[in-house]
Figure 1: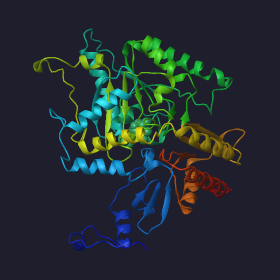
Figure 2: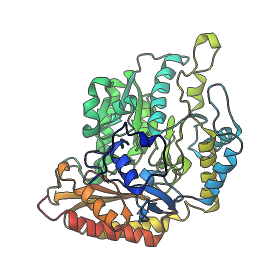
Figure 3: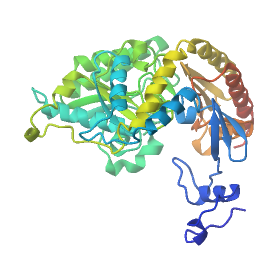
Figure 4: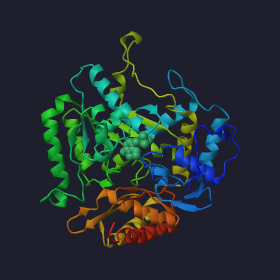
Length: 467
Ligand SMILES: Cc1ncc(COP(=O)(O)O)c(C=O)c1O
């Protein structure tokens, strides 16, 4: 039985330390969780964490197999990052970025420019992945209007099928996940959609080797017809995470860069999910030697500690915004907490940890181990496909392996695998029928093994017919 709660219960204001039962009741009845059916929500209340282990209010431990939603990098409570935030707290917790600055955020901007692909020289801070994309979209539009040779007709954006760029309206307009986005249609601008180069569900008659060329030809067709009206193409480089970890074939990103350059279209790389080591390199674009015109960063930027995002851009774009006050060329966009110094301190410390612990150099062994586990998982009945890009793993369940027929999403097969894993102390989150494996980069081999073993048993439990 859930404890009854009325929002008018007076005991809430004079608050003694709540009991576990109270916390669970309030969590069910007051807190509105993101992307969660609250009528069915079973509270999972994490009270503490250390390394890759989370501990709930009842003392149960879980391996963090989703890196706190794809953003934890070095594990929880890393002493260097904890200490950096404490030290910043002794100076100042927040400084507005509207006409004002602070040393920590300036140092972070310098460092981001130093480590990002060549050509990105300026940093606009905001506070979440969606806002970093929103910034890029608006900046691109204003750039075309204000540059020396203005192109005000460039107001359209190309985005991929199944794209996910966040939940603000501009980001949702670019999004192509029908179940999340269709509802909001009346509020959105229309994106020019091109199909994603999906390496599992390939177009009929197209061999794997021809996949990048096939999709690049289609993109070229769109750009050739509409480039005069297209401001930018927005892409999740290498892996479209929310789409179900759709991994692009090698060469596609490089081809996109060449085409966008040829047709004078800006390239916005949304590395909110894939940035900061996730693909094995610091940034996914590095895997194909690509420099986008804008780079959107969030999630792992603070190693999963605090909300912070950044949109990096070129000097050419920056210069289009310079001028006299009365010319009104400033970028009219901002977020109260953009570039918050506590978050910037966490981000700087995270970059120190990358260097001190040689995080990237240690990845190849873990990536190989994840590959071994995925190869075994691929043999299970009802596993249609496994895919991997660096420390991103995915296991896709299908009703029929030969036809690739998916399970109807309402059957919650992916969720059932994750529920099983949770009962064994492994925290995962599905993307429909896809089980995503995105632990902190600091995960140990033993913990990776436990994640894979739990998924193996979870798949067996979740794919027994009927639904
Ligand atoms: C590629 C990508 N872009 C943007 C976002 C939105 O980020 P946030 O949830 O921080 O707004 C996400 C979140 O999952 C993402 O995966």
